[in-house]
Image 1: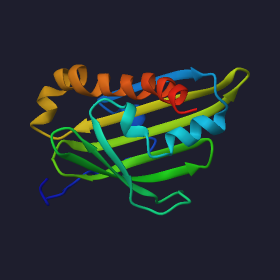
Image 2: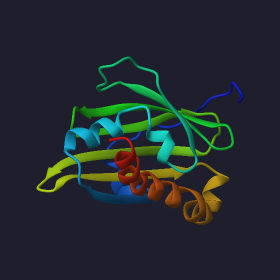
Image 3: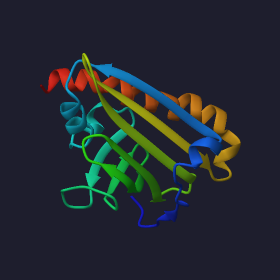
Image 4: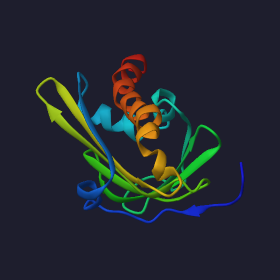
Length: 165
C-alpha cells in the first residue's frame, strides 16, 4: 500500500440532499437496540461487508464526535473517516477525510439504530461525489461496487448477529 494520501473534502448532513450518488436502506432486527449498536461499533464490521478487508479504530474508546477510523477496501484502497455525530447507542455519522486513491471528492455515511417492539431497526444512508475521471464511470461503479457493498453491509448484519450472539 502506498504512502500517498489524497484529501477528501469533508461533508455534512446537507450533502445527502445534493449528492450525485446516494443509497438508503434499513433492516428490522430481532435483537435489542443495544446489541445492534454494539455490532455496528465493534471490530466485526469488516467480516460481513463485501469488499471491506479491515476496519481499524484509530481513536481510543469511548468513541464520540471526532473519533477516527480507517477502512481498508479491495485493491489496497484505504479511507480515513472522522465522525461528526456520535449519539451513543443511537446514531453515528462520519465524513471521509482522505484516501489512498483519489476516488472520492465527498463521502458521508449515517447510521441510526432505533428500538422497535420486536427488537430494533437499523437505518443507513450513504452519499458520495466522485473525482474525475472516476465520475465519468459513476453509473457502472455504483451498480458493480457501491450498491452491492451497501446491500452486503445491511443484509449481512442480521446474519453476523445471529452467528455471534
